[in-house]
Structure formats: structure tokens, C-alpha cells
Length: 535
Image (cartoon, rainbow, N blue to C red; front, side):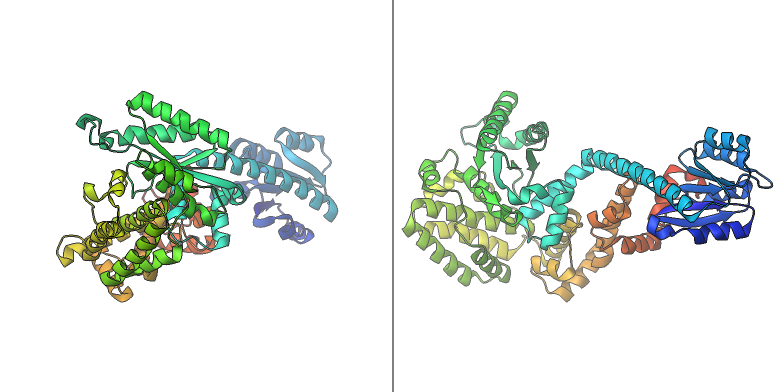
């Protein structure tokens, strides 16, 4: 809605104008009235306005002086002059000060409605242009890039959102068009070799390698989106919907750039084609599997065996995860041995892919629980280990060792373990504040009773779960208010608040000022107290 100020020294005229137009239908709101130019200028100093309807013959400050003052101080205002005096000087003053129209009293309903309608169209055009510019600026900002990366990681790692929410968020990051297209994931990394000199270890090359990967994605002009999964600090991942030729060209250019700048050729694995955002998790896993097989004996045989699809079903994966979180080692061992034996009997390709998939599952659980795996236990660093597992029993022994370590938890006393878990929970909230989070879900994720988790979180974090997540979301919302011109609806959606109204009420309760006024305060701090809003 656009705000309108009516200025006329006769109250009945102001009332008549208010009754003459269907303001709401036009998208307008009569926000204020004034009896002369001086009153109008005082009102404008305290309130925003988009359109002014003014008389010319008024006391104290007449229409000519008022128009000149408006043009000087508020050049963006749309001005409509309505007067009963057919005076050329009035018309000339109106035109000189960019009045949108000059109407003679008594103005008809159709005439006023038509004039206001044209102004609304102008304002809509300017608002759309401003919104597009703001969105473009935001999309170029580091914050937008970070949010897109969080969305990609969430999409391939966590339980996906409701279909409507998923598509809306994909639209924000210009990924909605990829819903119906075949996409492929690409995983790139530096594999540690025992023959490498110490100064050339992948650990010391991770940062420049990440920068090269991000630069490659940036240069692709939106054809490749890049993200980093914290589970695998040395790997970078891309998702693309390009054709085979463009994909091969990108991989070759990335390999050349890394080799030229770092003196070390990267390993790059390409996953299977998948369609639909809900299938991206499978596509991501297939790229990880493909990467793990690069440069290892028998990998060509496995690649020729078929696409790098996952061997373990999602349902079976969840069952195995449940066994680990419950500490049921016997059930885990029995289920894993059954899967390994069946895959071993089927083919070497299926057996190796299953080992990698089971490892990736356990590695993710260890990361979530804050458990550091030793170098020898990190299969993604030394994938050649898998070729030593020539029986189902050997593979099971390796995987059981990881499961036992996860079940045992961090090697600290119980109080330290709880503290580490709360730190992990806080980090999870920091990374996923924009999604629908609740206490029960978080407690289950860390294998705690909801009531106990709630009490422990408050004790360790110093505030309740609800207050903590609200503070995180509000901090991000303030950042968006300060750095972008996004609407309150957009900010509420992007920071996890249910709607703009709820966000506004929470903001005012915490800071003592509405989000809109806070934004105005940033532009005109002299209109407010020079104090940072307090919670």
C-alpha cells in the first residue's frame, strides 16, 4: 500500500476526497491530513508518504510555497494539485515543481481515480525496478552465497522440507528450474598419498584448492554451483545441469587450473544423473562414491559395472543409524554382515560400493557427535584401504570399530561430553536456522530424551532452545535489514520466522522498534536516539 497525504484548509473538502475514491482497491492508504502547507511539512517530517493531494489557496503556507518545499526536500513525492482557481501562476508552479496533475474543483470521481491509478502504476514500476536491483545486489553479496551453500548442503544431507517449502527456497536461489532437469554432482579433492613429501600434503593445500574451486564455479556463470560439506574438509562439490560436453570441459579446466597453481593433480569424481530435488541426495552420494574409487585397483571394473548408484536403501540406512544411536552393537553387526555378505556374493563392484556407503554413513554420524576419527579411520583420505577388505568379515571389522567409537561418544567425562554435544547442537542451529527446527528433532538427532535435552541445553547455553534459535534468527534478520532492501516477508522467510507479522512483533519486543522504523533509523539516525536497540 502506498501512503497518501491530503492537504486542504477545508475539512469538508478533505472528507469529500477521502469518500470519493476506493483507496484500498487502488493500493493506496490515506495516512494523514493537513490544513495547510506548514502542517503538511511537519507531518512529512515524522511520517513517510508517497503521494500528496494538495489545494493551492491555503493560509500560513500556500500551495506554491508548499510545492516548492516538497520538491526541494522530498523530490520523490508524487504531487497532485486540486484547486478552484484557474490561475496560470498556480498551474505554472505546479508544473515547475513536478506535480503529476493539475485538477480543477469540483473534481469528479472518475477523474481523480484515473489520475491516482496512473500514479500507482508509476510507483509500482519504480518499486519493481528497485526490488530487482536490491535482489541483484543481494545475490552478489557474500551472505547470499553462504545461504545458497547452506541450502545445497541441507538438500543433500538432511531430511528435505515439505514440497512447497523446498520449491520456494529453490526459487530464492534460482534453482527452481533445475527441479525437472537432469543434474549431476561432481566431487573434487586431493587424495593423500604415502609417497608425497610432507610439505605437499593435502592439508596444507586445502585453502588454495577451495579458492580455485569457487573461482571455477564463479566463472561458469551459474552453470555450476559449488558447496563444501564440513564432513569432508578437503573436498569440494559441484552440482550442474549442463550437457556432457560442458561437464567434461569444466572438469578438464578445473584439473588444469589446480595442477598449474598447486603443482598437484586433483582427483575428480562425477556422480550419476538424477532428476528432482528430492533425488539430489542420491546424486551427491554417487559422486562421493565415484571420487573414492578414483586411482584405485579395480575401479575401472566397478565404473563399467554401472552407474555409481547407492547400494544401501535409504530405509536400511535409517535402521542402521538407529542401531548406532541406541548403542545396539549386536543388531548393527548382524545387519551390516548380512548386507556385506550379500554384496560380496553379488560382485566386487557392489561390495566395494557398499563399504564406501556404510563408511560415509558412519563418518557423518561421527562428525555430528563431535567424534574425531584417526587418519587411518578416514576412508575418504585413504580410499585404497578398501581393496584390503577381501572378505565380508574384514570389512565388518573395520566398520564395527567406527560404530563402537561412535557409541562410546567423545573420550571425556560425561559433563564434558554433554558440553561438546551442546556446542554441536548450537553449531547445527547456526547452520540451519532458516529451516523448521524444533527441540524434539534436535534431541533425537543427538540421541537424548527431549526433556533432559531441554534442561541441559538451557544450563549449558544459558538460555532456552526457543530463545537461542530466536536470537540467531534475529541476528541474521538484522543483518538483512541493514545490508539489503528485501521486504519484511522475504526476510522473515529467509531467517526461519513463520511470517512477517510474527517477525515484526518479535523484533519490536526485542528491540523496542519496528523493523521498518529500524531501517529508517539507519538512513536517518538523527530522527532517533543514538542508542543501539536493547533486548
